[in-house]
Image 1: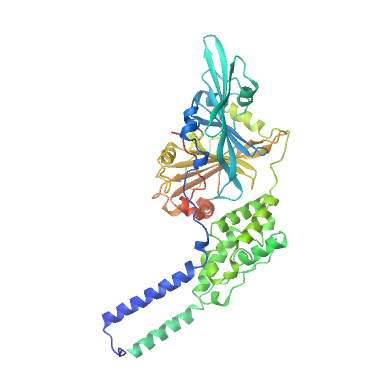
Image 2: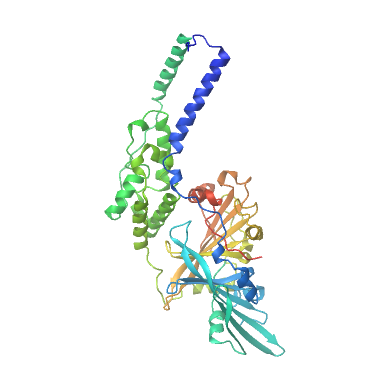
Length: 185
Length: 311
């Protein structure tokens, strides 16, 4: 191959462009790549499927509390669970306006309890893992008579494990009714 | 032709030499409040973080020529402004701990040390073993929420009831985002037990976001999707149960990929305390939000893994 002593300007420009492109690519690879970025497994943008309500579980329930709004929540470290208390509109309105826990008829509240797991996206947080139980209290009114129906669902899929109804709340129902609304200014 | 090339090289060389004179100094202020930690933790931070995030910056020979020097100087000054281990000892312990938790997140996601930095400084790489040391240390210094028989949230709660749930009329955030006061009735999509800073959190989502979850269109999230993350100070009752104490803050992410193109396609805002004080001195407060969320590019910058089934 003979060394080109005089190159046409157009050809020369294209050579220059090519070589600078190669140089740019090389420095880019050196600066941005190779070593570290690939070390970390990518996160998957997924819903928290395990903590969601499965179709089988949902079909066993008298209502879907995930459609309601929040009243409050708590964490039980001894049982490694986290719970959220939901309420329908009547219940939420009442809980956010009264320190007494005398929910009016038509109030529906539900405590959803999850097991918890480490948050894969943030070390320092734990998030819901699987639904462990859902407990409902329905405040109903027959003519002249208020009743408190308490139902508990457990297992996977959820199945009814407890059900009672009385004119005064059972201790389990009272435990839910007495939870104070969390402040949402 | 040869002469032309020679002249070109000479001009470039001269230009390069001349540019070397264009350099602002990189100050090295005294170490006033160095980070205190066990030696095995300190050693990791020294090798992987102190190069930029301290006043003890040591530049390598290849950092010195311009333009590398300009880039390195900018990076170091920015890094120190975010977190400076030579001065962090001045901050309250909880804030120092919080900063270190964020460091672990940044390292876990491969965002820190910056990959380009590791290319030139391979010794700065944080190994899996190093990461475990940092995590174990953080777990060991994170106390459970204080056990109290006092109901620390009672007074705020009574006031909240008395004011019809409006403790204050909050001003807009410094970036102009108005307080979305209807957030209270959005649907919960997750909760978090934050043992790093002793808060209980709920994440609520507006209808656009709920629909996106139902249709599994969450990467990217559609314009209009909005999240509210509410934090309460956690308190442990005598029964060992951790309950929300006083309301601490509510923060929002508002998706609009065009309007908020400069901030990862999300609008950011936070209101703190019962008086709902807008967070941040000026509109630059979003740098903090963006800095922490940027490593989550795989999930459209969202930390929450949403629970499905609200529709």
